[in-house]
Image (cartoon, rainbow, N blue to C red; front, side, top):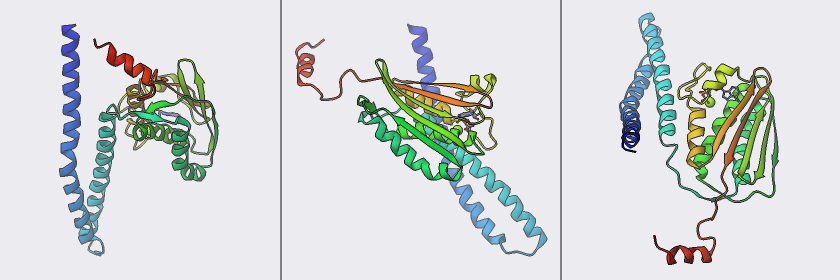
Amino acid sequence: DDVSQRLIDQYTELARLAGALAHEIKNPLSTIRLNLELLAEDFANSDNPRERRALNRIQIVQRECERLQTILDDFLKFTRADRLNLEPANLNEEIRRALQFFAAQAREANIRIMDFLASNLPTVLLDRAAFQTALQNLLINALQAMPKGGELVVRTVPSPEGVVIDLIDNGCGMDPETLAHAFDAFFTTKRGGTGLGLPTARRIIEAHGGCITAQSEIGRGTQMTIKLPIPRQLPGETVASDERASESPR
Ligand code: ADP
Ligand code: MG
């Protein structure tokens, strides 16, 4: 109705403004970072105690600028998460690609990856780049939850309602309070975290018409479950239904 439409419009406008604001901050921030870099070089090899103190302060400001940059980049990814370019894709192939990117990091962190990818998955519609972002966000969280190493199971299962993807880690897990807020924007329990990984992943998956849920137990691990819909008809798949569509204009 009218009221809810107005609310949706206002929300959309606010979201657009937030994205634009983040974008506007990027240019001055990169000028600031560049000049700090030059300033730091000026003081770099000084023995003068005053200049050494100045360099220390410059480096603190540099670190904070980097933090701002990370927050902005993550926030822009979050605001753009629902702009998709869907095309037919092989889900297992995309998962293997994400795991390949992740393999070196996982090895270094002593994480064993076990994949159980169903061979009979139907074709799904994906924005492949966005889907990679969503998977990477989940994989990085799993890695960070297993600082002493561990096991990560990645599984795909076809079902009548869609394709299910499970990522199961045996890391630190979450208490119920953390689990309840894990998908909130800017919620983080990590030093240096932005709290935008899960909300971005959720927006991406929901923009695909799917959903993402988490189960977790403190000290035991976390299971992330993604469900993606099976398209009723792939673009250009059958001539018959195309004809039907053009014969019955509504
Ligand atoms: P960030 O990683 O920057 O903290 P996220 O949105 O990716 O932000 O995650 C939010 C919070 O959810 C994390 O800070 C952490 O407390 C919790 N979390 C997410 N994934 C896991 C996981 N696999 N195991 C344990 N905790 C997790
Ligand atoms: Mg994260």
